[in-house]
Image (tube, rainbow, N blue to C red; front, top):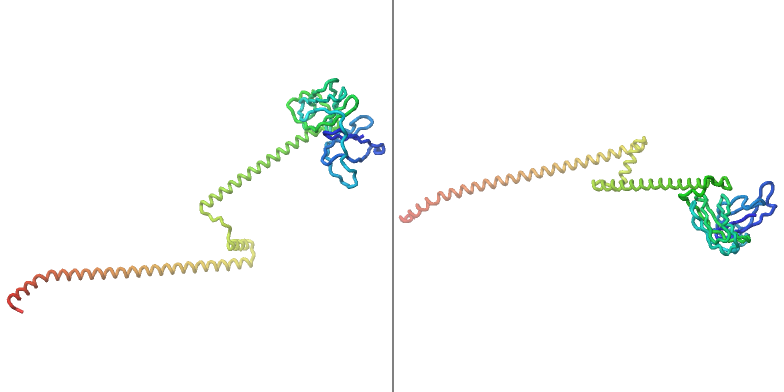
Length: 337
């Protein structure tokens, strides 16, 4: 028999015909009456005991592969009674069960640890509440169900992921081995996954910090270059061409070497002609300035000479003027013409 456990619903049981088992192995297929994205756990029972094969890991129901498959989902079975169970658990923390007054006493609580084991708890008869220290390894998934004295069943609880706790005293000196020995590595595997994720996050953080530092330094270099007056504009096409030709010279490309040499000669000749023209213009300007200076000096000398001659003539006239005038007047008084 195959039992399919869906968290929050009543388990389904599917019989397996004897013809499905032969030669020490077997195979059986059946339609799943569940909706897409439902979560289920499989358990296989044989003639010896329930859960002889151990619980499977949780599976997610996918979409139908063929249009000819039976229509799904089918309505889930109705629970015979209800109970309230835990929704969060930690190692050695009390798991509280209550509100199962509709069950026929005594009741049995079944715990299913995915990929590990199935266990049963027996609350005292007549009680409608029960507490149990969680003796389950951290990071294991567990789901609880309940049956009463008449064999009636309740719906299963939600799937609970057990968290690590500081108190480990509830396990005692000897801890029971898991049903499937390969699943004993599950906590260690999960811890390795957590450690690996932490390392990856740390490496990513370091890379991000390094990138931010590089960007800040690059920005500061640009600011210093701008303040120093450096030209940060993209290189011109002519400069890129000259650089390409210089690289060709280094690489030994004969044709490009000849082009490069002729271009350099033309560039040098043009620069020399420009410098010669600049020098000639400078000399012409100096000559004009010298001629203007000479002309200005000659005019100043001529002006000064004329001024001196005029001054001497005026002085001579003043000195000779008074002696001549009285003589004329004297001659006039004597009646001389």
